[in-house]
Length: 133
Length: 133
Image (tube, rainbow over all chains, first blue to last red; front, top):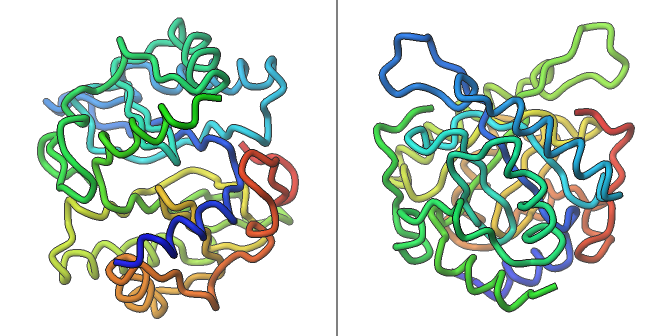
């Protein structure tokens, strides 16, 4: 694997300083897995967009909707790239701290990390329940 | 910005070797911006999921759906993280080459790159038409 080439491309092409993907997957109400949308992820993304706007970060940090991130047990869940930091059980009230500390300051918010996703190295398959998309 | 800390987290936490986000945004048929879904992005993601399955990469590379990536002019568009490589005008026929050359071999497929997104450094705002989400 040509890791050097990937890094070079990544550095040349970074369109956003951070690209945040908030799971907005919605399942039927009786699905035992639940879903991020049922747990308020649309409100989390709305709060994130508003906070980024307030901080003048529109176009620099993008708050993207995503389909199922296969992190259902941790919903509402989101992932921040390029650094690959995963957050779970995020509420709109958590958003200003994520923006201030991580997206502006560069330090992930420890208390919201999905620690289970921190225990494997690059390229290892992840858990998260049954594949969901 | 504590770039060192971010890299460290990124390396510890990489849940997927590559996390691919395929725009599945759909707009009304008369919207002048068009949309990735209208141009066949769902078929692109289906082809990608199938190819990853064939190659034994399920759980290692994730083919995620996403909302609007603000790359409407290049639809169907997708972005591959953590390396931040953007592809545009992707068809299902392009998928085996993206998997073989980039996701397995580590070398981006030059002919599909969105070159406009390569011309700015990290943290610079992107273009791509009116903000769309």
